[in-house]
Image (cartoon, rainbow, N blue to C red; front, side, top):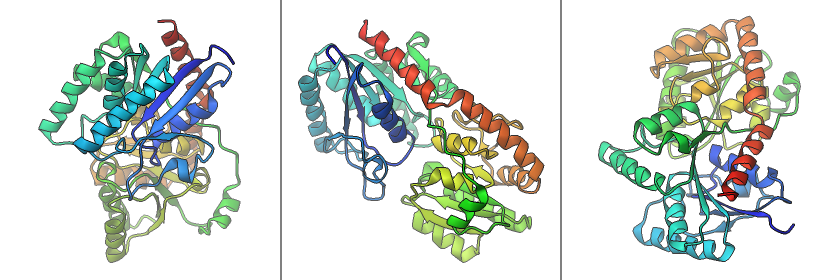
Length: 379
């Protein structure tokens, strides 16, 4: 095991979500005889589920206080120096940062540590739309432009993510690679058996939303869609898997308006939940490539989502689902068409399953990362 390439993965926090899943699969899946990896992360907020504690209990990580989501000058400075010490101790060949805060602190720490590691940063989405006020967005862009000049490779999680980052002047085209996330193929399960296990009505049409109930995901828009379906008298029931700061307010509104929604909280059985469902939905203002939609496609579900971010890499309009404008009425119209036509659901779902198998396999993602780490090591 001598002369292994030493790779340090740095991510702000391993909260349940796409970046955590991707990092965990890299930690598990890369050839350990060729790579020596170390995962550095912070702590999740109280309202977040920690993927390492709840799901990926087999993954070991070094925790650095202050590296998490919250911004605090003192805590951030401590986290920065903690990263510098850790980099000097491990002396990695490659430092791969994930998520915005870890990307800033990790790359700066790599420069200060002076160990000559190749710096790679993955944009699992971007912060250009829907997160900050105008002046904060300009600040984020200025920081990312500066850091891109000291980063050897920039990985965009989708084609639209790359396009928008380049349009903002972040990095140069030859720095970018587009790596689609990859997930293990789910085990084939019988829908009737799963519905029985999950105590779901065998006769209902279920539309499932999986994600954090936070502003960028627009759960309020999802509830607007549910209300529109009631008004249109379309028989459909919504399942919401996830929590977050808007969890309680969404539950309260759904109860007051008597909406056909079941709130499931955080779930570990997302693959089974999708396999037991009929349709998948997302209502976000902004996305990279949401892994939940890849899981939905793997389960053979048609997907209804707004045409934002790189969702279009997963959903091909009128082929694997429907891409709409973000307006609740437009989403409701597409959902009505799919909910009332079983043949359409089958056609879209099977095409989505084939696309997921072709473009979003775990093997493809591991191969892409192996190649870029090997290339980085030769620099």
